[in-house]
Image 1 (cartoon, each protein chain N blue to C red):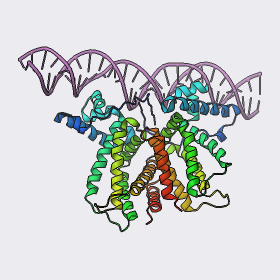
Image 2: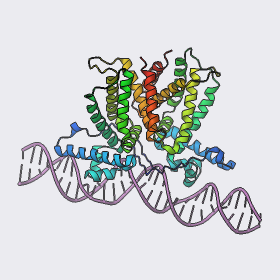
Image 3: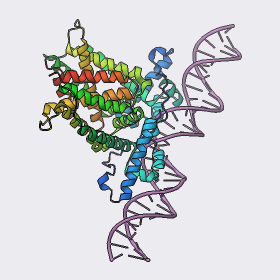
Image 4: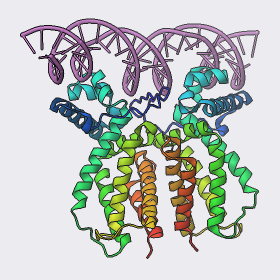
Length: 210
Length: 210
DNA sequence: GCCATAATAGGAACACGTTCTACATCGTGC
DNA sequence: GCACGATGTAGAACGTGTTCCTATTATGGC
């Protein structure tokens, strides 16, 4: 692996979000870029998402790519956010099976994890990006964090009328942390999929013994 | 930030460890390299640890640096392991204050976290490296993980004669995960030191209410 | 339609992790 | 002492993220 960085600009430069884009042509360019990123990541992981390759595949100039996404990290995290939103909209309309909160949370996590592990390269790319993100990507990352927390608290209380308590949110955040760590360990080849699942299950058990 | 990678070699190539080094001159070179890494990281963070700069400061040729540590990541993770061992040997001989396991664990974590937050750039460098490590760095990372788990279970049971249970170890691992996530969020400027501490404390409270 | 301005294309240039090449030096067996 | 292989030095070269520059093309106001 080869890796290099330069002085963090630490600007608040964000990716051009969908709302900022006036014309249909621009929205289309943005979509083409994210699609290209997705395909390259799925096929070859983090290393295969090369800015020149993304630009080529999206039929966009390199400079344009950088105008839409100020760095490779922004690009990948944005792609992650889009996928996460998709997954979440699918999840939202399902009734989650399980009798206890712990069972339902485990179900949701396994479901999501399995989805990720079905595309190992993609997951590797997105997790790496997530891990390398700095403050300038905070907005995008916050999006993902909120989606995850919402998903977990919803699993704890399937009844839409029950507002999650502070404690619920805290538990969801801890589970999210464990999940992220487990994902990193898995992505970097330091633990197997089975170990990841077992570790998650243990953590949920420790946190949600009612 | 600029960042680049190449196809992961996925070799089991490890850093030359101290034992492998015959001559005193070699042990000295290794030490000079780790010292240089430490200083550069402390002063300028991940980006400042540039292989050419490390080689210069350690008065070693670039090729030699790569002979001792096959990548920037190995270099930084090895430096982290060395610092962690130092911290651990200091900790080992202290009696940890606190009446409950939770109090003692929180004490240890805050102590360690404060140490890290006193050197933000260093912490940023080491955390980034940790996050970017792949399977070829598994050995070095495992060292750090074991040290952390040992530190935490020891805080739970200060009595040396009490063997930690499986449950203790599981809890320690979850706390380690939360800690890592919090550290990443802090390092990347997505949360403040205070938030990091509060989040840790909440997590410990959830896991260790006796 | 026509101009001003922004957006895009195309591609050169630069930085830094990593690799490679040519040569020097050290240490060991003889 | 000497030859030789391992180790080290010096620095060029390469790949990829990022920046920059110039020419061309859309776009919106008149």
